Image 1: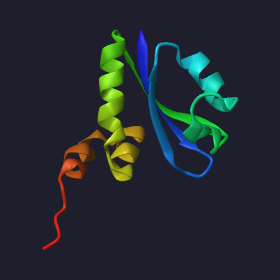
Image 2: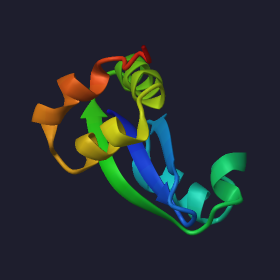
Image 3: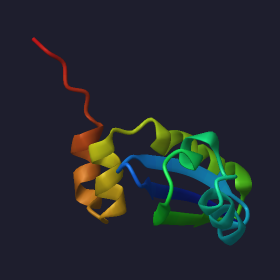
Image 4: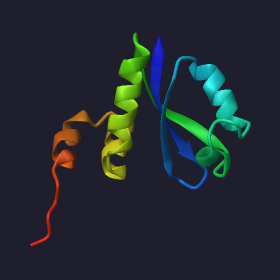
Length: 94
């Protein structure tokens, strides 16, 4: 099994990642060894996760969510799935 996960950092920012072992990866993040980004924003809190059978699927989802806006990530975290399509639309200035 594999996971796509979202962490909330101490500065309020979000970190999106994927792993085969979520518990071990959380320990790495909390100890400052998970990533350079989270090591400078400790402590971190797991706020969302999706489980996949294949690592490739979790990694694909990670890359997808990394490109989302903060508002769209927060809708996902809060289970407000009905908001996702509207948040996906690009807003162009006239």
